[in-house]
Image (cartoon, rainbow, N blue to C red; front, top):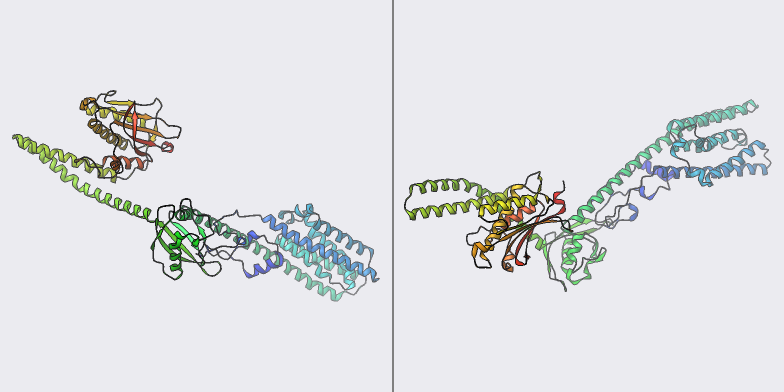
Length: 604
C-alpha cells in the first residue's frame, strides 16, 4: 500500500534549486513508500524495514546557506578587484581610496569564505540583530563597501545598483523580514547618498536619481520576496521532516507488527527472488534451521517448489488459498496454508506477497476455538441443569423420610449419590466458564497450601505427619492467585493423589498404609517457586499420561475427567504451570504433580 508524503510546491522547489543545491539527503522526502519493494537508500527508508534515525539539524542547513552566500561574496569581491585593476591598467584615473576599498573588501570576503572558524561559528540567531558583529561583518560590510564605491563606479558606467542585490538577498534569506527591509532601506539610502555626493561635486545626475528611485523600489520588492520565499521554504522543510518522521514511525510499527506475526510473510518479485521475509516465514521455510535472510532465490530448494507454483498462480490472478506441502530431505514434511496477494512495486511492476500458515497450528487453533465454543455451550447447559438438580435432590430427601423399606432406602441413597456427582460436574463446568477477576491479590501461597492440606486431612480423617507428610519453608512463597481457586487446585490434586496412593499401598494394609506428601519449595536458582503433591506408586503409563489434562478423560468409570483439566486451566489463568513427572520422595518412587509459579507471578 502506498502512503503519500508531504510534497513541496513548485515555487519551493524552484527556490531550492536556486539556493539549496546542497540540501542534505535526509531532507529529500520520497513521494511514496511501498512495502515489500526494494527501495533506494537515498529515499530514507530501507527495503528491509530498517528505520534509521531522523536527522533534525536546522543550524546545519543555515550554515550551508551562509557558506553559499559567503562564496558568492568572495566571487563578487574578486570580480570587483579585477575590474578596478583593469581600470588602473587602462588609466581610467580611479581614486586611490576606491582601489584600497576594493582591495580591502576582496581580502575581507576571501578571508571570511576561506577561514573555517569565521564561517562555521555563525548561528542563525547571529544575523537577526543589527547589534550583531556577524551581521556587520557580512551583510553590513557589503552595504557600506558598495556605498563607498558607488560614486566612482557610477561615473565609470558600472551597474552599481545591481551590487546591492546580494546583501539584500542575503538578509532576506538569512535574517528576519524586518531586518531584510531595513537592509533594502540602507541600500536605497546608500545609492541615493552616493548620487547626492556626486551632485554636490557638480555632476549632472538627474537621470540617475530616477533610476536610483526605481532601483530602491526593486530593493524593497526583492527583500520582501526573498524573506517570504525563505519562510515558506522553512515551513515546507518542517512539514517534510514531520512527514518523514511519521513515515519512519509507521515503518517501525509495520516492522514490529510483521515481525511479531505468527503468519509467515514472503515478498517475491517476478523472478522468484525473495525480497523480504519475516521471522515466522523463515522458520516455516527452514528444514532444520531457519531459512537465510533475504534476498534469496525461492527456487534454490526443491522442497519450496509448491510455493513457486503458488506465487505463479498469484501473478496470474488466482488469489485462492491453497495447501502446499514442503517435503524436506532431513526433516518431516510440513503442510502450509498459502494465500497470495499482489502489491505494487517501486519499479512500476508488481510483487507477490505470500501469507504462510502452518496447518498444524491452524488445526490446533480451530480445535481450541471449538473447545471454547463447547465450553460456552456447556456453561449454559450447566446453568440450566442446576435448578432441576436442586429440585430432584430436595424431592429425594423428602421421599427418603417417608420410606421405611430398606430396598427403597438404597434406591434413594443411589439417587442422592448421583445427584451429588452431577452437582460436582456442574460446579466444575461453571468454574471453567467463569471469567477471571480483573484484580488478583498477592497471597502467601505456601502458607495457604499448608492450611488447605491440614483442613483436607481433617476432612478425610487422616493424620498430618503420617498419612499426609507436609514440608514447608520458613520464608513465605508469594504469588498472585485467587484464594478459592488455589484451594480448588490443591484439593483436586490431594484427592487425586490420595485415591492413587490407596490403590498402590505398598504394605497391603490399604488405607492404613497409604500416604501422600505435599512440599512447598521457595524460589529456586531458576527464579520459580514450586508446590509438589506426591503419592507413592508405579508411574503413570505413557498412553494415559498423554491425556492427563484433557477434559472428560478419566481412568475411572465414575470419574468426570475434569479434575486435572480444571487444575491446568486455573493455573494458566494466573500465569502458573502444572506438570506431571515420575519422582522420588524420601527414597520412595511415585508420581508428582508440580505447580510452578514464575518469578513475575508475584510482581505488583
